Image 1 (cartoon, rainbow, N blue to C red):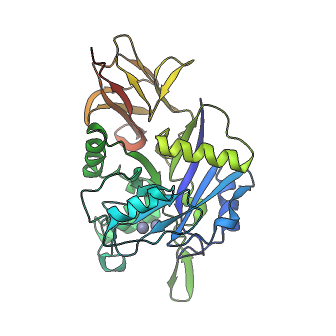
Image 2 (image 1 turned 60 degrees about the vertical axis):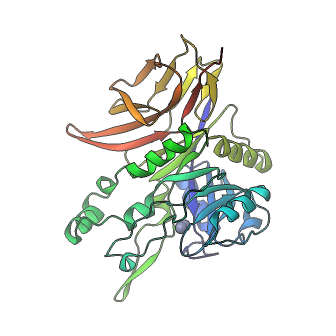
Image 3 (image 1 turned 180 degrees about the vertical axis):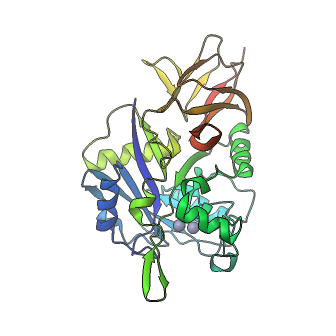
Length: 352
Ligand SMILES: [Zn+2]
Ligand SMILES: [Zn+2]
């Protein structure tokens, strides 16, 4: 079992990001990422730049739609038109073209301090047949973060990490609902990086540079074999892991997510996150954490059923169910912050 960190949903200067793909790759390599996914607005212009560069696998997707219902799409080789008004039609069009689609920042909120409260949430429900959703989007979180002008400024300059809460609870509940009802939906974390330059009088500052964002919310893929050094194979491995939910999201600013493991069965034949197995007595769940400064919550069918303080945990699940993990990182004695969110393992009832 191998894990690789990557950053998903990056805007380059092919749309409204400030950096070229070459500059972005250099920052990704410096941040120790294994892969990145460029997703410019309604554009696949970066496609010719896909390659393994500076040891980083560079994939180019796109973010479709304009005012609402943003849809993050990977694995396309030619553009597909968006549809703000009929996103189900768009989801199906993308699937027919062989694309892999994720709802982008579905519950985005605006802030009165940023662009007059502008937000682009997912508005049309219910929808089906999409592959996954962003459960955690760093830029979108900041867009909706507005406790007060004083607190926002305090957090930005003195405790940026501390401003990060977990994914919105109502979004996690919706994600669980899809998975419990058999519409499997993969959860990913993203940066939605733009590296916007802001002008303060004569000074221009980049508030969240790419290099900073690449150490915030990353999505780690879990592979059976090592990530190949040849682009075509590596691309297939990454797309396959994201499609199947062999991945977890981590707020790396707290502590690296390298070394996290969540699987059922044995290490020689693991059932990894995103996979299903028949539930039977004796089948155990295993969790290994990169740090012991943590509280681990076991979530079954959308409810927390147990909490653990250990760094290595073995559990006898109480029955069939959709099991996922949430981990909080202990920053200090009394301060815990959301850190890791796994995709679920599906333990299915065996019909007699
Ligand atoms: Zn968006
Ligand atoms: Zn975006």
